[in-house]
Length: 365
Image (cartoon, rainbow, N blue to C red; front, side):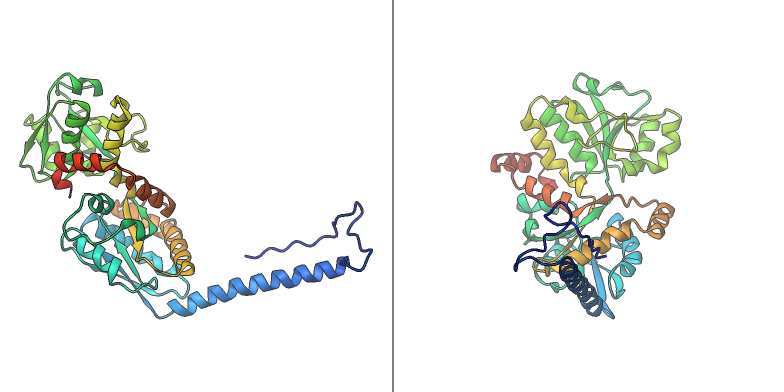
């Protein structure tokens, strides 16, 4: 909306100075301002009409780097269901899955082959930036060149213990061993305790072979293991066990606060040096991307502005919010500016630290 203000206030105490050949009269000034505002409004309307003309009848593809039913896929489908009505011209929005190599194929396609006109959006792994710096084989992208549209969800991670675990306070983990379940290398149940042991001197002992976090939560109640570290959302099925005191959050693995558990302490409080914090930030920062959405490099600036505005509006759409609540999908908004800053910060990690991460968690790649 273009708002124009006209008044008779000028340089003189009683209004505009109209004396002299170079002074503009009040009516002349008002007419000039009217013409300027009309021109600005016309330009804005022309841009909006141009965007509507471009997108009308078009098909927007959201390329999801994971299979159907995955959390990225479900979140992308919720967004796609409501995105079109927030784009000028109201194009059709569809989801296309490219699950090969856990998002790497999708990332390469969006980066190098997708049309650079705003009609293709990538829904990629939150680990893409870290993987690129770690030299992930076959990943041919520079995440700094992606155009970040924003992200949805904040999949904060926690370490949980059973009622009879020998560790009941965060500080205890540095004095007593805690047996935790894991479903294998390369995921939170393994990476979190491994990093805490190496960087902070914690005393987690891993027992692998479980199918997933819900299975480990049941194993805790059976007394097979004493705890687990995983995404907080993975414990939805165990809500009653938390209410009954059979399970409890020991600490959060995130530096940022988690609104769902505001009283849970952060493991970063136990870091003794800035280097320890930097190491954990590099490994764990992926959670701050949420489920990120990107455009390919080279999309025109006006088209980028249109798509960023559309995505931001869509995630606040009451109909999307209602659908997300029904499906229990976290659509917490992660603004594109945050993802740009996060990417730039990760790229400041020293080569020596990156090499240390490679040795400690090779499967992070």
